[in-house]
Length: 241
Ligand SMILES: [Zn+2]
Ligand SMILES: [Zn+2]
Image (tube, rainbow, N blue to C red):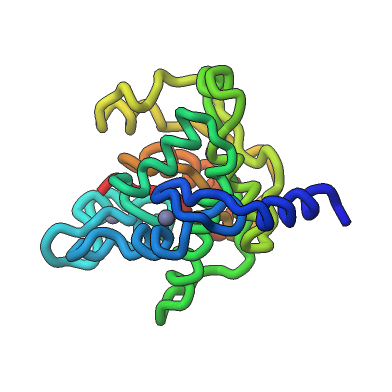
């Protein structure tokens, strides 16, 4: 039996605590109640813009930003809002560096993708290539890992989808996005990435942990489409509401 499988079996026998409520569960995962709560979202939440997953205020099929300036990606699937309780899972991965949160987030994202694909008229390509947003050199140095790449590793296993390495590269380093306003983020993201592998005619899913303005995933999608990708879907764990 491969070592990884042995490790997983052992973990599932030992049991762990649900990272959100502390309930005893088999393996490093959320309990069924927390998983369902997170995926259901807040009570009374409005529908999401299908293109960028922003919660829609008022009527209309798309948000005002997507209507004003169409993005290079055609669809965004977010597992949950970047708000309690789900945001804690992202923080455990990104600030506490708990790598066991990557499969937890990937499972939520896989379920959100399955649910989206089951909707009538979803038109989600079944053969997506999973591509993580490359981390900046500064954040790689700080964390010693790229949270998006960790999520992709688990997501590829969960969904049995290919995740070729290093398809996307950063052309330059940028100031920390979190410190910038919306306009500065958008300006800073233009031409940020270059596609470094063969993707002509392929359907690509760009993967990130959190989507805030969409400028980073937008820049990645632009680079992938320019390199010949047939379509780009965005998969994120959390979307700022
Ligand atoms: Zn729980
Ligand atoms: Zn939108």
